[in-house]
Structure formats: C-alpha cells, structure tokens
Amino acid sequence: GDALLSLTVGVPSNFACFYIVGILAHKLRNAIRYALMGILEEAFMLILMVLCYKHGLLPLEIAIAYGIGMAVAIAFTLAYALVKGRRYCNLILACSTGLLIGSIIIGVGVYAYSQFFTLPTGESRLPISAALLWMLWVYITEIPFIISLSPPITEVILKVFVRSEV
Image (cartoon, rainbow, N blue to C red; front, top):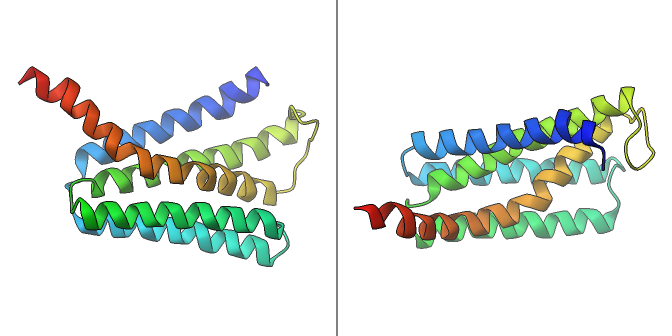
C-alpha cells in the first residue's frame, strides 16, 4: 500500500461517504420516492458502465460482472422498498448517495495522485478515463453489499442499542 495515497484519497473519500450517509439517513423522512431515487442513481451508474463498455474502456467480462452487481443492488433496493415499505428507503438513498460521492473522490483522487506520484501498481500519469473507471469500480463493487446489508445491520443496532435504553 501507499500511506500517502491512503491519507490523501482513501481517508477523505471514506469520511465524505459515511458523513453523507449519516446526514441523509437522519434528515430524510422514510418515503418510497427515496428508494426510487436510489434506483435512479444505481441505473445511472449502470448506464455509465455500459457506455464505458461501448467505448472500449471496459472488457466484456468486467462489464458483465459489473452488470450482475448492479442488478443485485437494484433487486435489493426494490425488495426493501416493496417488502419493508418505507422503513428503509431513506437509508437506501443515503447509502447510494454517500457511496457515489466517495467513489467520485476516489476516482478523481487516484487520477490526480497519479499525475504527481507513482501508484503502488507502478503506474503514473493515468489518462482522465481512469478517474471514471476507478469511480465505477468502487461504486459497483461495493453497492450490492451496502444495499443488501445496511438495513438488517441497522435494524439489529437499533434493537440492541437504542430500544434497550427505553
């Protein structure tokens, strides 16, 4: 690893991601429209991925894997909205938006870092398309897990820590 890369890109992206998740999950009311907005964010990333494939930036195997990941995320978003009703719609949008912002920071950050320093993989002076590809990779590989696991983990935390004090 590269400590400077972690401190300049990884730490700020994680801070921004989780800060946004916390703020949005707290401030947004539970409403179905937030699940729909989350699906729109996920669909936007899926379309962006397809465009990268169509322009030769992604090989077919990776595009298929990314497509499966996005299908899983969208399926979980729909399932939570339909089965749980409005209960977790704000959390779903908060997680998707926070991860999107964090992913953008990573994409731009890795690109910018490579303009001045060598990456741990030995690359430097990456093309601007690398920012888009890093952003897609981070979002698409993490969103299925965040969307599928955040609501049940949140439910357990609320049962154990919040409701036990009442």
